[in-house]
Image (cartoon, rainbow, N blue to C red):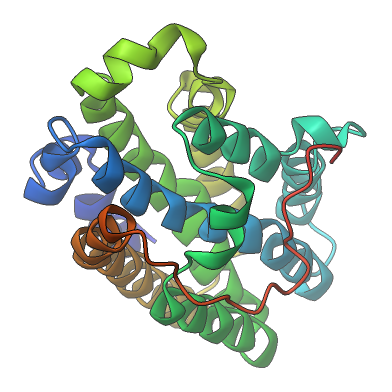
Length: 251
């Protein structure tokens, strides 16, 4: 396990992501580009809740299984759909001027394919591979990356101008000490499940998560310039199959 933590430690450094030029560019991106980048993560967080439930299904009875069950309840709003984390993020995007229609039509098809591939691997591989893929990859890697994104967003003039009118609840949770505690507890309970035999599977799942996560954001940054140009020209992006993630203010 010490070797595994050492392998993963570089990607868990907020400082590493703060220095990423793409993340830094969020501090001065114009509004169309901000919308185009940030709307992509809407799909990552939407898929995550379902994937976490699938991981719980695969896990043996354990502290980690119980912990992830609590995380799923939080992700789904603790009996209040309006407080589900995907709904929180949608409200943030709407405050930036993204329309409900755009929420559904502007996912990068390459990113949807990445998310579908992750789900397929989660179902087909061992539970310990899934822990690396969606336990470590989301609860630990995502948390530090979002901290860096949040840091630079707060410097952006477009955000500063709208700060008081934006619903910041999603970021208050995911760039906070509370989410840091999630990561620490996840790591603690993973160690209880780890054995010499299954650590290689854990590592393989985590490395796949890291590769996929960074590719997901690379697509978001690459596609943002084209998407901004589409909006400025008045053209509409083609519809994307929805997989049950249709925006609803009532949810």
